[in-house]
Every structure is written in structure tokens, then in C-alpha cells.
Image (cartoon, rainbow, N blue to C red; front, top):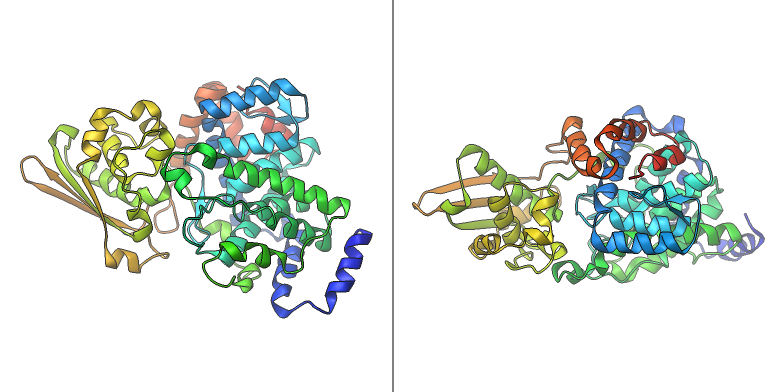
Length: 462
């Protein structure tokens, strides 16, 4: 502990309340977590999450804005952190954490967690890769730090979820997880780790969900900023900066719909592993659309349905999902947050992958179908949130025949997980166009070990 932090600890000791012990318990868990304490099944899930997230980052590097900023920053200065999807260009860890974090959210294919109501992995992994690469950390150190970061991010999210109206969950709590992971990677003691986490909570972004629904691509940078802020907070704590006592709750209470549930920070530490409750995505759109797309996929699998046969589609779902009702998005981001367009593009393109939600997919044929989609709230579906987030879909054909399907929970989570083969297929689809088919196997294997960050990052070169 640095001298300023010692003085702060002494002055705040008497004022520390029972509720503040939860954040101290979490910081101690992070600082003391050892690889041997992570069950094999959890380590396996963590490496699978790392592999999936690496693939999603690489898939997102082709986004025009991401590619342009990457080229600009790569030309400005050197560094020792890899920019994914480039021919080996390096930059500072801070810029790499931002760019790789941003690339990982543009496709809306990043792993998520239903109780966090967001996406923990992409908020923490790019910071750990950038810092671990520059510090020559081992694969075991990297895996342990990733688990610590993920567990922290989810618990901080659970403390404040549900968020107040209009907040987007990206960028709110993720920086705390990133700071915790970097602190573990650098082997900070518990007190310094706690200050890094408290400082990171101060950097919560004032995000707006409308940025997604209105197609403002500033939203794509929310995850990048969380990774950047996590690195900065760890640097500050290491230098002796101190955080606000009870800082996790006090900094974040303004984004919570109710008083923060501080006991969520320490609940089940070392016994309940939140990473096992995460979900993976195969549809390149907001998770709220996934029950609908799963139901529509079921209809298409059971019946020979073409876009020309469809007269109308009725969707019943839960309230948050029902807000995504704009039938005419104007760019790729806005398209990913539209249930009517998601239905229209799937019926016209035949896929729910990356290519179904690009600017090129915004065709009049897709719009025509989207305008015939009605989205409403179903009380019984709404009552099952957050344990289940489902949807019912009715497709009415020109002939008058109706085709129905319902989904209680989207695929990819605990209720209906993807097989590793399905996730590997997703990885191949995203990665092969960037690094080449001959390198996909090597990169997947390295991510699944996981290899040292420097080895892993080297394999992401285009």
C-alpha cells in the first residue's frame, strides 16, 4: 500500500460501515485469487469465453469507423500492444484497449450475462490483453485475471441493475471489472486493488440507450472506454491515488433504479461463479431480439417459408424488447436494435449473422417486411423476466395460414446452451476472413489454452 492510501485507510477506518465491507471482500477476493482456486469447469468456461470474444473482436475490425481510427492511431506512434486485425501494428496499451474493446461490440455478437443485463467479457478482456502483452504475462496469470475481472464486473452490475430509465448498460459498470482484472494481473494487494476499483467506478459513463436505437455509433465506443478507464484507474492506484470510501455504490448509485444492493458484491464469492451464468450469441443483433429470431428460425425450419409468402408477422415479448419496434432503421447499428427489421432481414437474407445487419442489408425488400411486423408486450412473458426472456411469433401467410412458434429463453444461455462446435463455427466465420483460414485452428487453440497474451495477440494479425 502507498503512503497516501495508508493515510486514507486510517482516516476512513472508523467511518467504514457494514455495507462497505462488501466491496473490501470483493477486492480481497480479486487480490488473493489463485489459479488453483478456480475449478476446472470454470477455467474451461473462461477460456471458451476468451476464444469467443477474440473472434468477435476480429470480426468487428472490418467496421469502417473502427478501421479508420485504427489506421489513424497506428500511424501516430509506436507501442507494444497489438491492434487486432492489422498486419502487426502496435500502439500504446491504452489505445489498443479502446480500439479492440470497441471492435468487440460493433457486431452485437459479444458474450453477455442476463443478471448483469450487459456484456462483461468485452468490457474487460481487451484491457487484460493489452496490459498482459506489454508486461509479458503468462497464460495462467492471464486466465486468473480474466476470471477475477469477469466476476467483479457482474457483481458490480448486479449491485445497480436495473438501471434508471434510458441508461445503456455498456460503459456503466464495466470499468470496475477491467480495473480489478488489471490489478490482479499486476499482483496488487487488496487495498490497492480496492482503490483501483473505486477510482474506476468514478469513470462510469453517462450512456444513453437511445444511441443504439437511433443509430448513433458513439455507442460502439462505450466498451472501449471501459477498458481504457480500467487501465487508467489501475495506473492511478499503483501511483498512490485513492478512491472514495464506499466508492462503488456511491459513484454508481445515480445510475441505479433503486438503492444499490451492496451485498451483491460479495455474495457467493468463490462458490457461485458468475461466468458460468453467461450466454453466447449467434444472432448479430441486440439480445432482446434473440427470442424472436429463435422462434422465427424454428418456423423456417419447420415450414418452407419464403419472404414472398409472408403477409404479416406478430411478435409478443417482454417490455424492454417491445421497445425495439422501429421498422425502418437507417444504419447497421440501428438495425441491430429493431425487432421488425430483424424479422425482415432474416426472411430476405436467410441468415441472422453478421451480413444480415450491415448497411448493405438495409434493402427495400427487408423494409417492406419490417413494416408488416407488429410488436406487443405479453404479460405472461413479461412476468418471467429476468429468469426467462422469451417471445411468441405468429407468421401469417398470404394464403391465410398461420405459423406459430414460441421461445421461453433465447439460445446460448443456461437454458439452451450452444455446443462448442457451434461456437467454433461462429469463430471460423468471423476470424477466417481476417487472419486467413490456415491460421484459424492455431488461434482457436491458443485462445482455448489460453496462451500468454503476447502469443495470443500475435496470432490476431491480418
